Image (tube, rainbow, N blue to C red; front, side, top):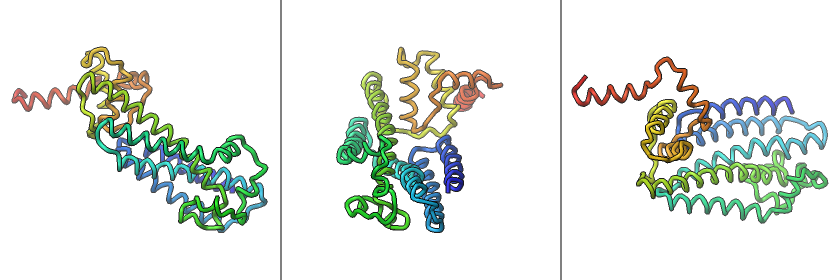
Length: 275
């Protein structure tokens, strides 16, 4: 069992990393990641339905650890997709929208504090009730997805663990997005920047070159590079490498130091009829 789940996790990690490193929008990334994880979840289910656990400890490990960790990522990316699909325009409306979702997560957790404490403290005295099949508690069991309503592939609390782990990831995501909005709101008020997103069609490296050129020429005054960098990512709907020292080092070692600026200059000269 460990061999199968480890191999599956390694395959998923590789695919998800490729998706996250792409230049696609968060909507596209979350949708593609959801598809990868849905297929992996099907494989996991097929494996378990044909597998006989060696003992209760192995079964508990699967439903307390292995399955929830995979399921939590599926829940996370599905939720991110829905969040971004329904995200309103305007900084104030987006901030209110994201805060409402974050409040919902906090309320969910508040209602389940006893179980969360049990899980996070690595307690095990109730594991046979929570993480063995056939120990159905209706109140616990009704929390699962409809497609999860399978006594051969579900226990009382494996979905609850997955939801808790997904909420942890979502809280980080939402907090980061709210911070970007707060930073952008301050910049918007000071510099009259647009509040709506526009998708950057160039490469990530080209945008990084542009940001560093703006900062070097102090095009936005004394705005810190980190703040400008985060703002541009949000406005242009793109996720960049936030290790600024490494980004600059990578730009320095290129054979052609400023390919985007050169391309922009050529394009403008042609438009002006001077080339």
